[in-house]
Length: 345
Ligand code: FES
View 1 (cartoon, helix red, strand yellow):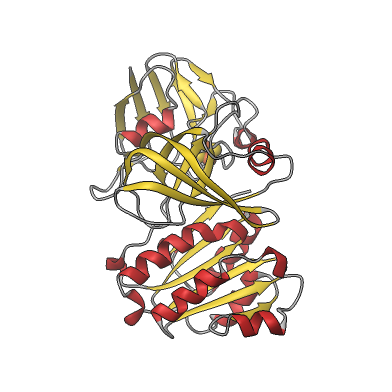
View 2 (cartoon, protein in one colour):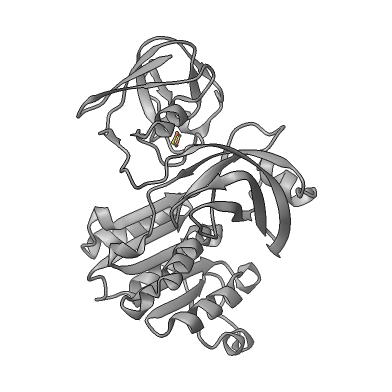
């Protein structure tokens, strides 16, 4: 059935299967509809229903708080019952020809391992290869648990048969309760992706600044791996600021040390502990990394002073932390086009 979209710049039309979410149907046909999380929390995919009928697949979606009128709905959580005419407030373009077009996929969890007391590394083997850019995420749905969750890939490959993730345990999160209390290996999952505009490719020709809190570091690892493989830090600067609360919350320190050793001095990695200073033993065991105390955006602000020229910034973490980083970067006159972020709660 046909879905017509009116946007500020133009009108579009695309087909949708009965029951498919409006956002996923449009993105799957290379229509760049507005979205951020794709999973019902941010409200960015808000649209107005001009005609037709929809089913709301998750009436309790937190992103519904951004709906102000009765005819507004979240494209990522609603499916068309028949032909629709809808309106979105922002611009809509065709996706660039070289971006990876998102699609539905299926796979199986094949490995799960605790990295800290509340962070897990997870691997999903796909039934068919999936191409994605460094820094992107997929939406994952586990049988028996409502809705999709957005997880950023740690690895990077063009035709990947395996996706690696870092998952943080959420208080009262149904999915994370299950992941952290059961043995998830062997579970079949449904996916949609890849998604996200916080992407890196070597032709970018910019210095890289990554600021991440907790499991937000996943997409940054994908970017760093991609950059390291292209020998990017032989000709560009890279600054990584990774924030966690305390030493018991830290992970990927060995991976950072390995990357730093492979990429040389133009890649600088700083671990920011917000609640305690790093111990001498930790510093001694990771001599190529820098350790600071404070919130990650404050540590990054001090470390980057006067060094924002030619930077593309990637940010990931809880919304207040990302917002603080965006304000800092705008004050430093980094253009909005060079500030890419993923917020997660
Ligand atoms: Fe739909 Fe975030 S993209 S609520």
